[in-house]
Length: 118
Length: 116
Image (cartoon, rainbow over all chains, first blue to last red; front, side, top):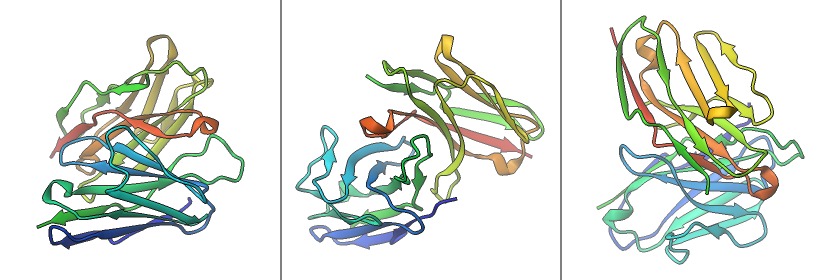
């Protein structure tokens, strides 16, 4: 199946610093990628939809200035957590769909990034 | 609004027992897709099945089977003869049509614990 690679798999950063997470589709092109956040023992909550070449669409309640998304190519989307605080500590996971015109494909997920802000 | 409900937060069974994980969904779309994912402790999501709204055939894959009942908006997942390796959190998800964005709405998840 298609592969989505997410990097890093875990990161520890100091409060106030910024962290960038990369999501790459390795063997297919993805016009659209999705970013989710999962707190411990909770479900995955969609943060934003990343569209190649255009601005991301953020879900209600997600601060677009804090969670910067860039989707500069058909195989790469990045999420930057700016001025991270301990409450941003979470598991972040991206997904991508192959956009070769087949509608009912499953969304392939990256391995996830566990962010800890100290 | 779209919604997925997994009423069972935690289930604990003994190895070799059968277990059914419930999933109920809400949507106004006539075309939609339903998914099940497994999330082991590592965190990575493992795709299990995709079903579109026009295909109500039940499916069996090894020890796994799925029952899609459009009339009751349910998409239940059964593991037959459970094994310890089945221990994980299982998520049911609903996808809006791809031409409307295609995002996934996840249920709350069911944590399955299979004891030896």
